[in-house]
Image 1 (tube, rainbow, N blue to C red):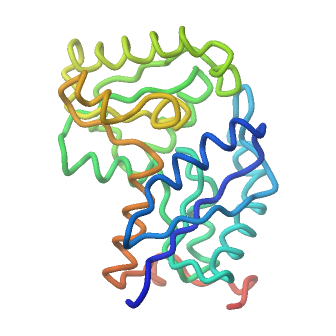
Image 2 (cartoon, rainbow, N blue to C red):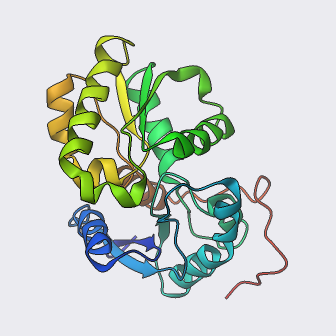
Length: 242
């Protein structure tokens, strides 16, 4: 392919400073071969506790965002967050690769180890992340789950305590649960507030995060000219090609 591979990163509604943090991290994964662009989505999962109901409510807005990305000429798209919002639906709506952050993290981790330690925000996010891991048939690889102890919107106001909890629990997963890969399922933990390279050096095991991993994986699929199987994700008749 001539020119850069263009990957869209879809972000829902956030407070301005919080959104800027996420945009900066996503844009940092651009390089000489990959262009990263931001697509705004008119909905949010920035709540104190989400349930399966909230996840379903945001799907239409994210589908619109994926369609916008395709119409603007992006070669692939990634939604913000390890809840993989609307990923399954979008693959039947657009023809560009759609990469779920949690799915990317789990599969990349499988190349790096076999015993995954997972860090989530709180009890409610634990419930949702367990569902996602089960959906991708990776439950057998999880050796331990730990909660950093704060709902997503509360992290910034409790940053010092959050960082202390997060790093301590990550070490516990490695030392006591024998995890050989760490997965922060919640990007506000890592890479937004914790540098994954620094954490990996501290722990002695790889840390696979949910912004750079899916962006770079999406670009890889485009570079290999690979697309989602229409046998597995048949094209929706409700969304004609643009």
